[in-house]
Image (cartoon, rainbow, N blue to C red; front, side):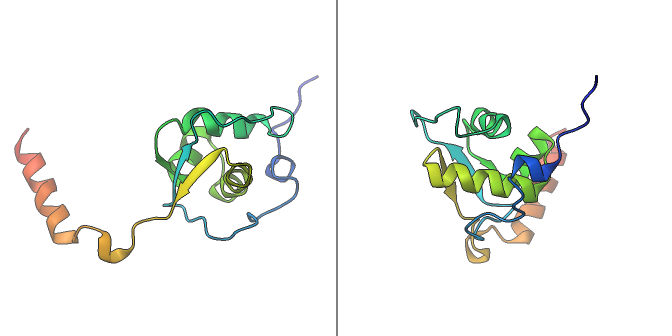
Length: 114
């Protein structure tokens, strides 16, 4: 008998938002090396998050890698953050980002290298 796809509300325990609503889709996530995570406490999606996040990735990138909605991923990452299994860095403030004109110049330069 074939089971249908797992519903997001089952994955998140019915929650649609993390306990802390500070996670943005640009927030950066990295698994904490050596963090002890009890496999009985986390679900398979959270284990997959820890696997993917061995390197620093944004919430949006992790969602794309795992094929999960960003809202679901934010809840799961929030839970892992509370457990101390991941480090979460806020997105860069607009003042810290490179000016759009500079990014466009770099893009033009890269295209000329072809």
